[in-house]
Length: 171
Image 1 (tube, rainbow, N blue to C red):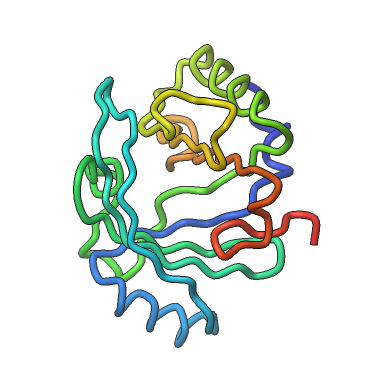
Image 2: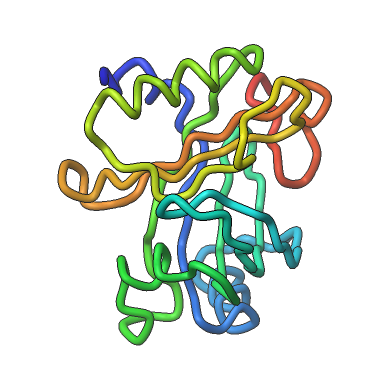
């Protein structure tokens, strides 16, 4: 897989925490990020060949076309988040970058095929069965052996652009 073509659409740095309130306060005080969109989510993901309900708390700040994300794993297959970082080392811990998958849904399914051919393992996939009627689709790829972190690929329908979780990449 030729990652260099994807890096033009890198838009997010994501951190993991065990205390969302303290992490958001830290980001405000230390990084000057004032406005976060907070959400609690439970989604069914395909993880290790099984459909599992993943629960997270998320804080997202859009800064121009970039995004700063903090995730607090809550339930389900949280080991994808917790095995990769030492949650006791700092209030926020780097976990992954996210790359936008632009264009129509076929671009996302094509990327899934490329990832499978690359030898990298897909840690999470949503939706479980990719379908063109989806409004959002993502996968976390375990790129730790090559890059030292996970890589998320995120596709969203054009009408989602500009909403709190989806920055306008053309701004």
